[in-house]
Length: 259
View 1: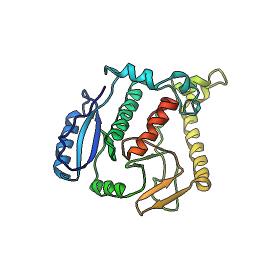
View 2 (view 1 turned 120 degrees about the vertical axis):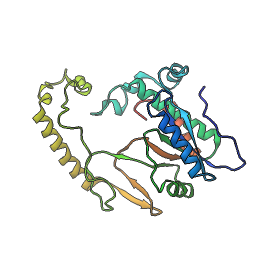
View 3 (view 1 turned 90 degrees about the vertical axis):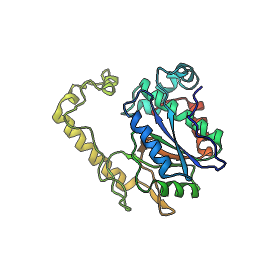
View 4 (view 1 turned 135 degrees about the horizontal axis):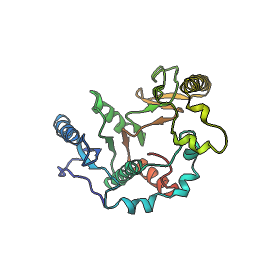
């Protein structure tokens, strides 16, 4: 099984910050540099270390998939039947397994951790955000979120618009449309001008929907709760209780969508 690259225990329970990184990644050297700089900058407050990401080449990849992935569960999931749903790629499965093993590590440590992916950039208030999380009652806090579609909320904290794919990339060869070929003629969607019209209509629908349906609230000045779908696992804070919840859901429902 996979093990983290551990920092020697110094008698003080410092918050562990794991950065998921593939050994063969082009960003590996940058990640190692970030680890060294962060451990010096935040010395005595938290400990940064690399977690070797699970790739399809990993010796335990097949074993973990047999335990946690079931194709039939995926095909019956809401994710698969949504307009964005397709089967998961091997890199996506590896990404999920990497996060799963870190949830397991969090439970084993029995203390909160921070999990980051190797394309993140630490902002100046990272340490303050971590301290706020540690003082909060929350078991899971996204340190970064990718919000879908249009947003205009009373707190004005979300981006004004979702960044759609560029117009010069129409739906040609899109696997989503392949699923619907037997139901209707999808050729109309392969036209660039039609793609623009669909983009415009979707934006209008989302604007109308969120104007009347979005629920939001602030807690303890810094924590934003929203009913809007938020994507990305680029960075998050997690307690053992939260980790157990994620693990139990994975083991019960299997891997049915990207992490």
